[in-house]
Amino acid sequence: MNKSLSVLGSTGSIGIQTLEVARKLNLKITSLCVHSSIKQLEDQVREFRPERAVVFDESKAKELKIALADTPTKVLCGMDGVLEAACDDADLFVNAVVGMVGLEPTLAAINAKKDIAFANKETLVAGGALVMDAAKKNSVTLYPVDSEHSAIFQCLQAAPPDKKFKKILLTASGGPFFGKSREELQNVTVEQALKHPNWAMGAKITIDSATMMNKGLEIIEAAWLFDISPDNIEVVVHRESIIHSMVEFEDNSVLAQLGVPDMRIPIQYAITYPERYESLVPEIDWKTLSQMTFYPPDEETFLCLSACKNAMKRGWLIPAVANGANEAANLMFRQGKIRFLDIGEVVTAAVEHFPDQKAKSLSDVLNIDKAAREFVYEYFN
Ligand code: NDP
Ligand code: MG
Image (cartoon, rainbow, N blue to C red; front, side, top):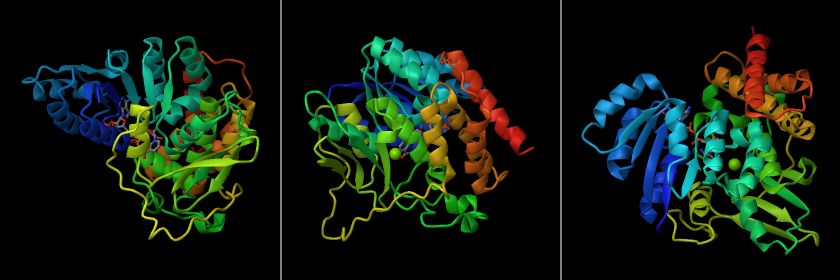
């Protein structure tokens, strides 16, 4: 396939799988960006020969320059480097960074009129209004990478000419703690929370799946991407992760997209849309898939879900509060500083604490994100 990609977060779970797809489809890579994993970045540069290699952590730039001195690849660092990569001349910017640190590069890529393969949900949650406004203004398309949103995007290919649909059925695996009570969750460890039943992913999103914050973030992500009220998004726990989400139309007909749980399908579709190519992912084995189960989510145990719904209903900067509080609390849990259930409690408290403010500029979002993180640090102080 004749397409070029600039990849932000190339050493992460989505980034590595993006490069597997790129290898399979023989795509050109123009830029690779990471936070600090320079050894892995060096290997990627030697294979894909991009024009730019960017390390966000400026203290690693010198070492990377020395390592790549024998290659023609230009080494850049810091947010300036990331922004240059976001605006390079690739056909598609793959945003696979973790966290709302991806907001500025997203806006930069959109303003440079680059279409985006979008994995970085925190950016859309924190800065959805800004991102969607800019995308509309610049006629830029965001191709969803998140498996549920890719599924919805695929189901909507069959929407009627007026594009109307009734609701989204957002599937959730339920994570490692499905069916557990709050009492049983009081002392769960980071190691237990990192054991996802169906997906192998980065650490932050794996914890988000265990708290179901991930599904809360995805409700907000879907509301922005598909211009639908969170009231019309129903979460359905589907333990097997074979149906990746569904769309219900006016006539109560429901379309679903299915596949084995492997991110290389949605990543590839975001890159090749509207074409489909042979995939690295195997077919569903219908002989061994004996059942598909469905349950309602337990919002009383998994508080993040209703905190995110409330945040999106209030709108403006409140989703950024929910996201910022969660980014801080998720990290503190992984560092062993707080307990598992504290995450949902502090995200809920943050959403309740911050008053509505009718603002949405980039600096407003960055400021409220910082304030939400500080709220979390003080809450546990
Ligand atoms: P990982 O933690 O595995 O990877 C994150 C990547 O981002 C790494 O390459 C990291 O570099 C890089 N990075 C982090 N901070 C910066 C920064 N400031 N500047 C440049 N690069 C940076 O995350 P995932 O791949 O799991 O997730 C990425 C995004 O995709 C998240 O938003 C997640 O919610 C979403 N997503 C992930 C799925 C999955 O299956 N993993 C599924 C659906 C959505 P370094 O290696 O140097 O730290
Ligand atoms: Mg998902």
